[in-house]
Image 1 (cartoon, rainbow, N blue to C red):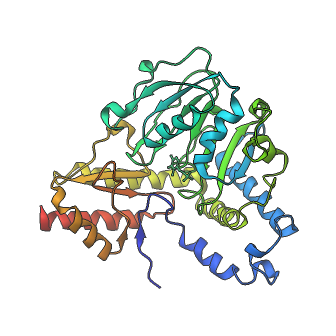
Image 2 (tube, rainbow, N blue to C red; image 1 turned 180 degrees about the vertical axis):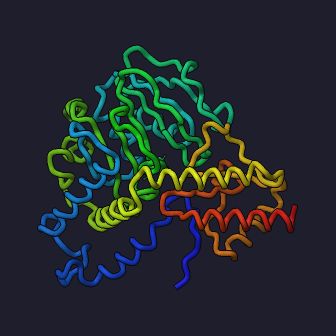
Image 3 (cartoon, protein in one colour; image 1 turned 60 degrees about the vertical axis):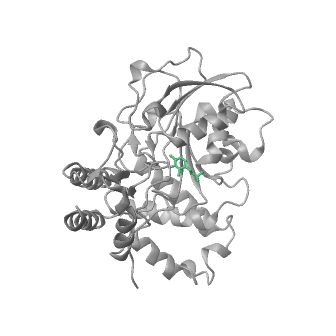
Length: 359
Ligand SMILES: *Cc1c(COP(=O)(O)O)cnc(C)c1O
């Protein structure tokens, strides 16, 4: 077996321990003589798994009792529609802060259902900064404020929580479980699984219970958070395999010492990589230092005619998926929870050697 260091932005690396458990479990899960993909989601074993996954994510994120934990399909993108459909009536105003491509996409969805006020927009500087809160123009009567705490493509991350009593809806797809947060600061948190939770196909939604009452009465059943809250997320057949893997990842994270422990590792990984980039004239990162993402690290080569060689040689050295997003160019190393410190050290060694030979 040969595994590479995988810097994919998503679907992203999973812990090897989790993959090995899956391999062992597949033919005969828990002595049932069946795989987890072949059993009823209403059976005792799966219901236990679902309850444990919820309990573990509650512990990991310290989720208060007055919040519901939901698992849905449709990815983060479906939540971009579900947020307005569950929190507004037609004609209501909502505030959005756009700090990257995903925030912009969220605005596009919300506009179909309510009146969107863009309170701040960082596209004027190519999404390389978070506009200062004092410069935002928020409305007086917003039903909620939507932010993207980590923008996966340009690599910018909030280092503060916006002020005020309006519920904050946060797309945490690419930084969920990467560091401690205070859930009480948010009304709704949502995250597609395929970065820090598990495989694509399942989405985590954490919502304050009083907000469940605001859904549009004509909303489709599966687009209504309350349907999930009332059915333990089994309102229809859930994505059982993805849920099973998410449960293994939550257990792995607990074994690693939880969110606080992984946050320290993440902090070190990011500091090393940005440090190496900043120390060179060969590589650079355009993001304002105080809002650089600890999960997604884009960098460009001073001489972009070397991009092809960098990608070819890094891949040959076992460093996969370093190509940057087409809208940014250059490279991007996504260093989520399951990407080890050793992987980051190996990347930095490769970058140093590549610069020595080609610089
Ligand atoms: C990956 C990502 C998405 C898209 O998630 P899907 O599950 O594909 O819908 C949305 N927002 C952010 C911040 C992401 O990183």
